[in-house]
Picture (cartoon, rainbow, N blue to C red):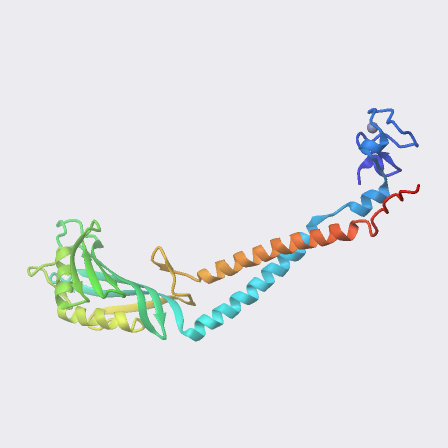
Length: 278
Ligand SMILES: [Zn+2]
């Protein structure tokens, strides 16, 4: 309530105390024009939207949470999950220097079969080290597209150098060659063995890679996801849509409540029209 109004009626224009005048002695406006504000009038028409906003926001968020949970269960029932798996497998070259494969599978699986996404195989090694310095770094990579079944071989700078139908021995040999490992410095396991392990692990990503000195596998995510990739990433995007719907619901609720309140404050009976006889 405005401070000036706490102890009685005031001019609604300037706040000068009202004492029955027709023209405000302070601002010169007529009471009929600018109005007279009384404490009762303020209380009657004042609307504090914060409670209404908080209430509806709560309702919107709770229903979004419930909806999102239901959607998660439905997607799970349909069998869709997003997977993000990380493999590491150790090999060695002809000079017994380590070579490492870092393999990442990101995609969408339906009933435990990967349907869409990519398997990225990054070869870490150093085929031609200088005598003094040896370093393990990414030297080439292969990208398997689950939808097309194609494998693209990329050189150290990420340029595509060849394409194959799946992880064939030729594709793996091309990966080795792109990394600088040729006939004079072959990698163990051979391209044939590696081809088999990669093809196996692309279909059954829970397994470790056979033929390698050591291999480990970490499953980073397995969450229900709609089959909608955004920028090649599968996420629980339906939750964001549902959250947005919850916010819209809250907004509409606030509008509805304020309108209802305004209606409640309106005068119960319209002033009757003056009778023509009077
Ligand atoms: Zn005034």
